[in-house]
Length: 486
Image (tube, rainbow, N blue to C red; front, side, top):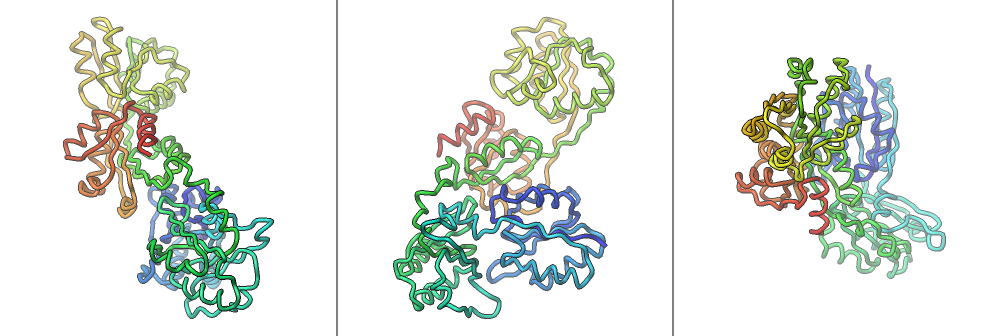
């Protein structure tokens, strides 16, 4: 018998899941997620984890609650560690209680991991504090719909005071507004409706009980949305920190490997962007190709690294083989600041660095220092362009090229993630080719495209994809371009 984790995913922003939630996801061998759980959270899963979408879109249920309950039980009985990833918190109108009762009925072990509820977080991202000492000393959360009817004690609700929050209620907004007015609430009472809160698609409408219905229709607000009623809405502009971030409202797709994406993604998130990470390339390590050279590394005058992957695989392998790095007498050459940083992490200062993030630039730097018959080792990707070794050989150098890894096409389980993307970042020709294979050429053409440098631009142009190119051929250059545009 397996175990089940009911995990609160938070309201949308992928960083609002808890550390405990991430730790639980990493254990899972099967996961069921709904439409309000950010799909970027699936990156924490094992590669062989089974993933099931059981979302409920208004008017279209992929699975009803009974089917979901039965599926969780079935997977647990098969021995899986099951994750039920739910938007917000499992117990705040998330039907987590029903799922737990089903687990108890079948004697299945479970844990419930709380999540940050949208009733607080979405208001926060819209600049609205859920309480305030002078205006609201309590808050009350209601479901805006039920599976049977919408009967409420409206007299009590209208007179209770504090902040009133209605989840899943945009289709019942008129009913909510009419009843609050009917039982004595002032027509000028402030109201805000926030759609897709904490995401790049967040949209906020502010009005009062008298005019909010018209404003919501005019702005085409739809589910998922949260309704908040009360004087705390008056802070919505003053307390709005999200829209002040330079990339707020942007959904940016990065296409690098999972390992390479981390630092770049963190910077984009800090600038307010929502990030769709599609790992279009997967690295297949082949360090054993170094075996024929490992015993004569001391003979080389230069070792050139053209990527962070090459640096990490090279040094990890010689460490595994217990090779003493002090035997290496070669000077180190690198392309790009990240590759340089990776080399320096090993206690080595590169002797030669390219001015730009291309092999041609490294060659120009090498031309200033190499001599005829210099012996050069280039550990790199099997798919790397032949320019650098060929150019160095033409200068009279003896060049050994070792393929430490292959770049393979990644896998994309859910193509719909790409639909919400505004801008796609390409950092190599292989990311271009693989993304075309994964999501389709025409879908890419409909997005704003940024290339890290001229080599990537050339691959995009070959496929008739228009793009902009960073002035500095680096991640920092891409960020500078994004900031100028915004």
